[in-house]
Length: 342
Image 1 (cartoon, rainbow, N blue to C red):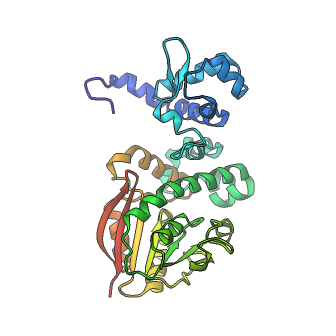
Image 2: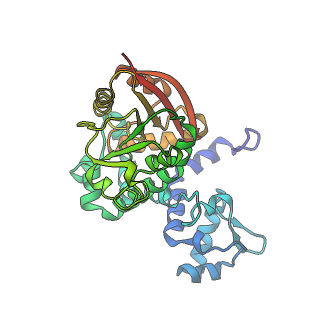
Image 3: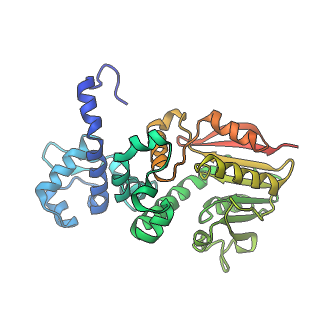
């Protein structure tokens, strides 16, 4: 992070901030063109890169020069360009790749929605329904299938990366069963079943989501004999008995939906059941800029919100959960370890 002594003066910094869209667009362009994938370990001439990604050399140089100002790629004294730690994260084959999330955060609908942020702040409501005449995820699946695919890939990659950290953090010794509520393709369940060979696991999510559950959890998979896949909407009911329930990154809807889901978990588990809630927080200092930006994006698309520690605790307590521990999973996620009161 830039120190106070070397930080640009306020007029320069504000000029940079209002051109934030140019930086986001540049990252998106590099990701879509596959520049990071084409760039080898050794620095490359722009002409060679341009040939590899089928662009004109001069505008590609302009794109790379703009990105190098932010530490994404590095221009060498001889005019070639090399990878940086950040540019490698745009490679599809990097184990910590952020290419999918970079595309998701800059999808075409975001460019329609951001200019109406003042309207969302004024009303407290999402703007997507006015823009497209339907709820956000309905719009994605019906009218923007490419964006829906980007969303699914971004969520899958994010889940893959965080599931291992969640499994490493949680001590579920003594629990016979675990249920991941809204668990997507089941990465967390799979990691926990790997960690605890005697445990059984359930995955509950919408039918269209669990259709694409990990092959390991489905019939013929190596974990299928210990895994149960349950199609359903957790906001309607949770027909899954378990010793431990995990709720990860799905309490970002409106307050009523969040309360309903937590109520359903409490009813499904009963007194004494352990519930682990894992969320991004907007008072989570290491990732404040990212988390607060995602918070505003949630306001725009679904009218939802990221939580502060206090707001999360108050919602959990109101639902009948006793919060016993709060720990960081990684710089972006915190785990709230709870039990059902009673």
